[in-house]
Amino acid sequence: MTEQFDMFSEQPSRDRVRPRGHSRYAKSQPISEDAMVDYLLETGRYRVLQKLVPRPIAPSARPEFPLRGIILDTETTGLSARKDEIIEIGLVAFTFDAAGNIGDVTGIYGGLRQPSGCIPPEITKLTGITDDMVAGQVIDIDAVQALVEPADLIIAHNAGFDRPFCEAFSPLFSGKAWACSNSEIDWSARGYEGTKLGYLVGQAGYFHDGHRAIDDCFALLEVLARDVSGTASTAFAELYEASQTSRVRIFAENSPFDLKDNLKSRGYRWSDGTDGRPKAWWIEVGEDALDEELRYLRSEIYRHPDADPPVRHLTAFDRFRA
Image (cartoon, rainbow, N blue to C red; front, side, top):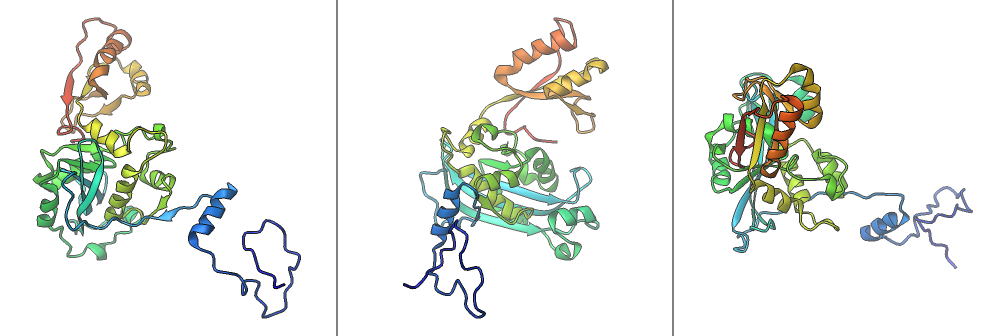
């Protein structure tokens, strides 16, 4: 009987030395990708990641998904929207319904832009974008407008970063509702160990070419649309619901300096006043948590029952601005 090689056998080979020119693979039958993946997963010793394939643009959007969303990502010359500039923007437009079900991809745009100065070396290292790549490049504002203008919601994985840059770049992005897929989804409750896009993509079972804007947009779309056993809805449905609620930003103005660590450990962040906000520690909470947070400040920080720190009520149209 002719011996057939089993590439997955856990038994050690009894014939480790073969005559030259004799391949142990020569007589093997072809094995399908699905069979190989199934075997590796069943051993419990491997995780298999699938290359993420971008969704195609639908020739026509299905009417049962009447709302329009944009997933957006930018690459910039630095961290400050006041002095740094966008060098790449990626947009994926899609449809969805009021229950948070994603429909069709309706358009994409990715464009490079030459900044006023040279791209810092650390940005090139991070993004792979060089001065030669952006030389003479201009973002097609008409193409951006065609996607952004009809959008009901713009989503970025760090909206607090992307929104100020986009609004500094064009007034198209002002007056739009924004959502942050990093901060407005409880990823840990969905079984994820981190919130960085690379972690989310990997744990969702995919890999992709990261740090280019349009690739990251498609990757985020798949993570948001993914059904996870044990959860009542997709991550996008959770995000859309969060975008429909009002939140409150509380500024602990004139709080005692020696209690700053208490505020920091509770989740407060420092604003130095240069972005138009009060110079103070601040936190953002849901409307239902406002009274409890004010009680905390009055009893633990100000230690005065009549303390009245400033508050701002925010919707998705206001959140994540500079």
